[in-house]
Image 1 (cartoon, one colour):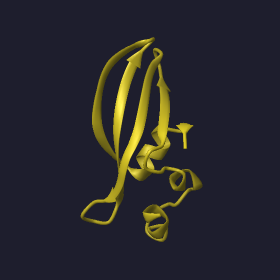
Image 2 (cartoon, rainbow, N blue to C red):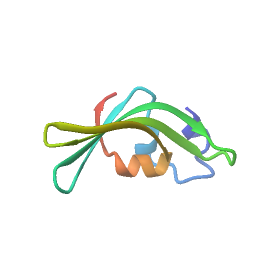
Image 3 (cartoon, helix red, strand yellow):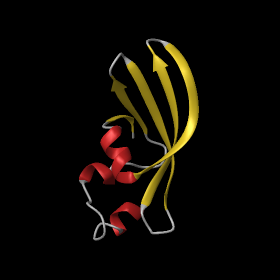
Amino acid sequence: MFAQSLGHWFKNTSRQQEVKVGDVFRNIRRGNIIETAKVLDIVPDSMGVPHVHFRISIESGHQECFQEERTLGLTSFAERFSSVLTA
């Protein structure tokens, strides 16, 4: 896995190693805002830092507010989305 090969450059937690293409994660925020993220790809930027491309849907209660694609660094993604729904 790409993230494992960069372990000597970045803090390489076991949580980061668990992020894989196709996985779905959930983050529940204050006010019962639910973020659901599906990992589309994990690629390095021009400096070699791994980034997660993902589709996120934001829900409030049972209503979906919006859906879009976003990118976060692997470390930031792993910290924000700690609850995996499917692996």
